[in-house]
Image (cartoon, rainbow, N blue to C red; front, side, top):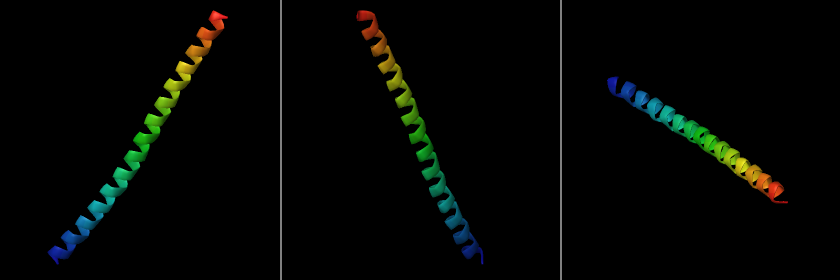
Length: 55
C-alpha cells in the first residue's frame, strides 16, 4: 500500500515538474525574444535618427 502510494506521488511529482519546466522555458523564451526585439527596434530607430541628421 505504502509503495503504490509512493509510486503515485512520484509520478505526479515528475509530471508536475515536467509541465512546470515546459511552461517556464516557454515563458523565459518569450521574454527573451520580446526584450531582444525591443532592443533591435531601439537600435533601428537610433540609426534612422542618425541618418536623418546626416542628410
